[in-house]
Structures are given as structure tokens and as C-alpha cells.
Amino acid sequence: MIPFLDLKAINQQHRQALIDAATRVIDSGWYVLGQEGKAFEQEFAAYCGTRHCVGMANGLDALVLTLRAWKELGKLKEGDEVIVPANTYIASVLAITENRLKPVLVEPDARTYNLCPQKVRQAITPKTKAIVAVHLYGQLVPMKAIMDLADEHKLLVLEDSAQAHGATVDGKRAGNWGHASGFSFYPGKNLGALGDAGAMTTNDAELAQTVRALGNYGSHRKYENHYQGLNSRLDEMQAALLRVKLQHLDADTLVRQQIAVAYAQGITNPLVTLPITPSSTVASLQNHVFHLFVVRVKNRPAFQAHLKAAGIDTLIHYPIPPHQQEAYRDYQHLSLPLTETIHQEVVSLPMGPTISGEQVQDIIKACNSYTV
Ligand SMILES: *Cc1c(COP(=O)(O)O)cnc(C)c1O
Image (cartoon, rainbow, N blue to C red; front, side, top):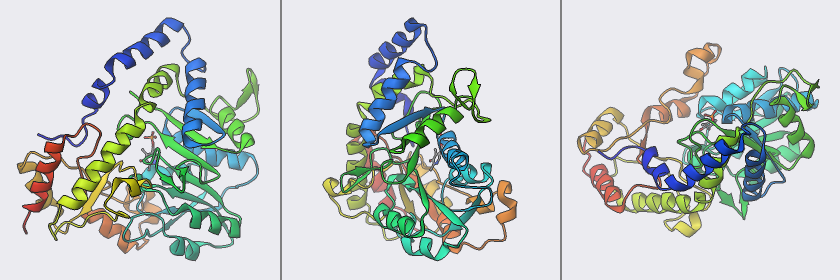
């Protein structure tokens, strides 16, 4: 069986370095808000090219607390409209509603599944105050156009970079395009901890400081509380493990891009719609770090069964769009036909830094032998 993602194999590659890092933390006697967290924040900020990084307990908190910080700083208020792609993972929308802001779900670009600047422009009203730009599946949103639009309408831009660590356009990485960005280091993400972890990045010192306080009981200084905060911090153990994993991120990304190119060139079955990629060479793929390689098929259950019979695991990202979830029953009246079609047709092929060339060929063969 070719697994969808072999987390055990991924972490086995760095087994001794991870054990050494964990041992360092165990022996330090210091487990929360210490040297490892500080070092990871500096290293990850340097990686993204941002001035600040604040470690958080997970990616959802990074998004929630950044929006919350903008409320505390007087830049957002309850009821403000926030534009978000309708086909995103639900966490992007949860971060908005958790802050009692109003998500405005917009249809994506039909070819890239990412935010489309024209459709964003059409969704802007006098109440619009922010955009959550989700780099879905690992591909950067056309951020230059989004930032121009944001400048024109004085909107805040929060990147959701949970799937796009290292994705780059014009030498600028995910996390350094918007006014702030949330990252997840959930184990299955491109940069994965061995548990839950997350971070926000920004070039705005006041914002970074506010987010840090909000994740620390609302406190800048011990026993002095400025905000009604909560507890969301990156612990020393995950930070130490992430420092090991960060050193291998670019090499892992290159493998993902090579697999994507092999899939894009090898899968020739007209029943399987490939993701749009700017070109077929790795060098020109820097804007896409292929967290997922997502194809579309009309009869998805049959396609998945065909691959399963060939020993290949697939997953769906995602089966139900946010506006059709029970949690958002107030939004069920919305008609978002493109998003709904995408959710009915997408299938994610195995993708990760430990898939072998032979396995890639087997997957390509199985995709090409699929018939209706
Ligand atoms: C994973 C993910 C999140 C949430 O991150 P967690 O660390 O799981 O809380 C948010 N947005 C997107 C697009 C994600 O893929």
C-alpha cells in the first residue's frame, strides 16, 4: 500500500537529531517560554524574511489571535466584513467568526482554486475591512494584486500560510506578503511538529507584541494583564523539534515539486484534471510548495476505488465546504456553485518528501488506467 502521507517515515529520517533536541529540552528543566522557542521564532522569521514571529499553540490560534489583536488595536470591530475564499479549510472561517467578524465567502479562481483579485474586488463593500488570503494546497495567492487592492481600499490582509511554508514569488515568501500571516505546524503540514504548533509572522512590531500578550493571558509583563487573553504558546519541546525540521524544509519542498512535475507530465488521462502549474520545470514552480497535489475527476468514488485497488491511498481536501457545514447553518442559503463543484470533484494524490520514484510511477500508471 502507498500511504497518503507517511509521517513515521518523514520523522524517521531525522530520528537522532530529534532525539537530541528532545533530550536537550528534557535536561534543561525549562519547558514553556524559553530559549528554544525564542530561537525558533528568530529562525522562522529569518526564513520567511519577516521582522517578527510569535510562536503559538496551533495554526488556528495564530489566525484567531491576529484578528483579535487588530480588534484590540482599534483596526477592526465586531461586525466588520472579512473576505475569505469559500473553498478554504474551515479554520480560516472559524478565525473570523470566533472574533464576531462577518466572513464574506467568495468563489475562487476556477483554475488555481485560490483567491481571484477580480472576484475579491466585486465582494468589497463599505463594511469590508480585511481579507484572509489562503494559500490553498501550497500555492501562493496572486499577492501583488491582492495587496494593491488592499492598499486602494485600506484593507488589512491576513495570509493563511498553513499549507504554504516557503512558497515564493519575486523572492518574497508566504508570510511576508500580507500585514500578518498565520502558520500551522500540525504534523502533516510541510513543516510539521510532533504535535500541535503554530506561529504568526509580521513586520509590525506593535501587532507582534499584542498577539504575544493575547496568547499569554493578555499579559506583556508577569501578573500585569492588559487584555482578557488566553493561553496559546509554542512549547519548548515542539520548538526544539521544529528547529530540526526547519533545516530540511527546502530539501523536502524540492522533492514535493519534483513529484508534482512527474505527476503533471506523466498523468495524461483526459478524465483526470491536473492542477494548473505555471510550467513543467521545478525552477519555475517556486510559488507552489505542493502541500497537496489535487486533481479533479467527475466520478470520484470510482476513481478512488480504482486507485485503492492498485494499492494507492487518496484523501479529499475537502469533502464539505464551510457554508454547507452544520456549524455554519446560517450560511446554508448561499449558492456557491464553483466551490460546491470543487468539493465534489477534488482528490488528493499521495504527496510528501519520502515517496519514491517507483511509487510515483505506480501512481501515474494507476491514474492513466482509470476508465469510466
Ligand atoms: C491546518 C490549517 C489551519 C489550522 O492549523 P492548525 O494548526 O491545525 O490549527 C488553518 N488553515 C489552513 C488552510 C490549514 O490547512
